Amino acid sequence: MRVVIDCMGGDNAPSEIVKGALMAAKEYDVEIILVGDEEGIKKEISEEFKNIMNRLQIIHTTEIITNDESPTLAIRRKKDSSMVVGLKYLKEGKADAFISAGSTGALLAGGLFIVGRIDGIDRPCLAPVIPGEKGHFMLLDSGANAECKPKNILQFGIMGSIYSKKVLGKENPKVGLVNIGAEEEKGTEFIKQSFNLLKTSNLNFIGNIEPREIPKGECDVVLSDGFVGNVILKLYEGVAQTIFDILKREIYSSLIYKIGGAILKPVFKKFKKDFDYTEYGGAIFLGVNKVVIKAHGSSNAKAIKNAVRQSINCVKGNVIELIREEIEKNKEVDS
Image (cartoon, rainbow, N blue to C red; front, side, top):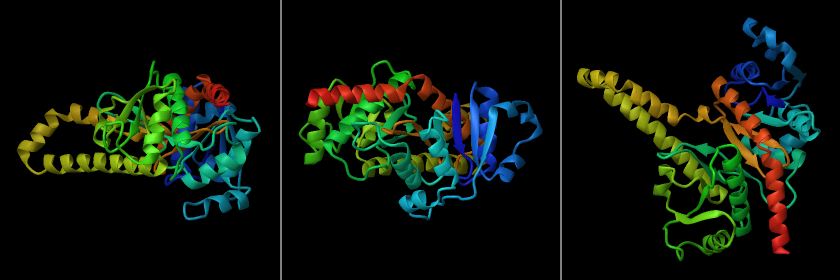
């Protein structure tokens, strides 16, 4: 299996990106294609990784796509950027998956224009895995589509359920629709129409889910348009970080609290690990013809290594082909 990685995207590029890629090459049975400035990449390859050089390939590029550029224009104009070259390798079958911590907008544009959509998918979506009280869950869409149609929501549910089964190991994923209330008659016309489509589908649809219920993790696949999903995701991250900061400040505010904090250190450590985005790798871009994963912009080596693991599981689970087959079945039903 071959995974191509954009080494120039993200806040910590190329050092943490290369380090994470090397860790993955060492730990997993995978070939890694590193795309970016060759000299900069080689500087990050320490002596401990010299014995895996036979599983590494470096593709030199001269351009970098930044977050402040127009995503579409950057993809079209910067042909020798690490992102564009990496996506072309994926498109041409020279790699099985692509990972980037770079510009989300550019990656979405590149995924559509270079890799292409699965036939029958109107709008691909970003689908991060998020920790919850009773287990992790997926949030689709988390930012690719600000406005959606009910049909898109149904397709998100189909893709999320397949991913949840094959990669996350959920036997019969429970699917919920984000709404302001649990009652079927609540919400906008868009929500009501989406509800009806999901209700008559073959998905394990459990109905509407209120935002305050999402963190419990009782719903495996949480559905919304990209605007609402992105707000949920960023609020979720912000609240989690705020809780950590408040706890840390309070623990260090007195000697007694410090002693108590020391006793509870294993609990805090596990709690922090459960909410650590680096454990989950990145958000898969579901609906395109190949495995494309968007790693967090501030990804460290651990996050990149886990993104590689995530991509391996996607390929082994045959996620893209299963989505293609399921969408084809739905097209036949519609016709």
